[in-house]
Length: 154
Image (tube, rainbow, N blue to C red):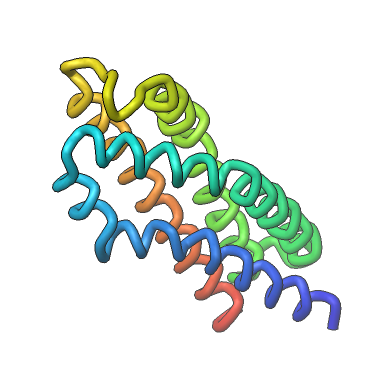
């Protein structure tokens, strides 16, 4: 029963993590790339301010639950659930790597700008932000699909 509860919680939390990359794929990427510098800076800074603490708590939670799932499924290391749980955790780890290496430092740069005061190369910074974010999207999708396969077929 505990294993089923952990699988459910892991799927639930990971699906919340995945909702952001899917929303960006559906609308936010194109919308943000179409914004003027002042509008983009204002939106980016409002999103960051709103999500900083919430996303940190979400990521810590899903990482802990993912580790618990790995621990519980490690009794059978050749099982599909265990293997998929490892791949799923790796997806989260890659997401965190690209977040810490790319998106957070770039967010801090953008937070130093205002809609009235920004560098002429602002669009290049936005391009770098999307470069890292697109890698996070791929990692999250691979990780979630792996988790889903492991939970459903494992």
